[in-house]
Image 1 (spheres, rainbow, N blue to C red):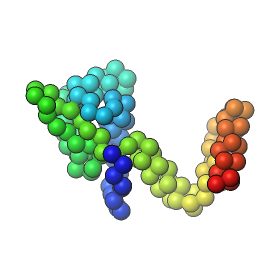
Image 2: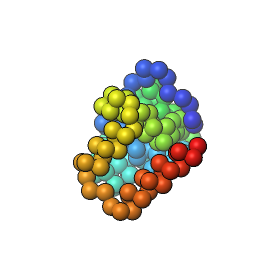
Image 3: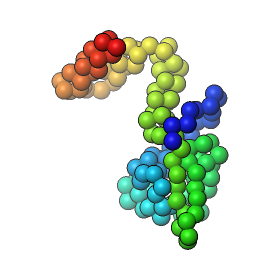
Image 4: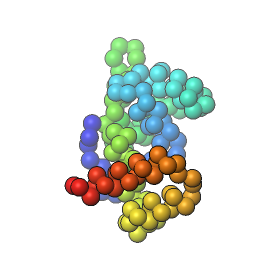
Length: 133
């Protein structure tokens, strides 16, 4: 895991993101059948096994997973973590939509939804911790 993203690496489609999210939830070396169950039960997606395998192939080509067989069963090896992907998305969106300024992101978040007192305190703690570094 923890392989860096290549410059210009293609982003994931919405279906690839959903399948990858389910892969991360299943954990390392999960059987494909478990992934199909999570997609159906948690996300309401009753994909055929062939559809899931096709998307896993695409995710493999993009360097996110590797599928392998052990006996009769297929398993998924995670190559890029959810945290890595999430950080990359946040950085790209911040650069594109908010001129690279975190303050613009926070301002947009605060103006677009209600923030609880606890959330505001957590944001303050995060900012204080960052300033200490």
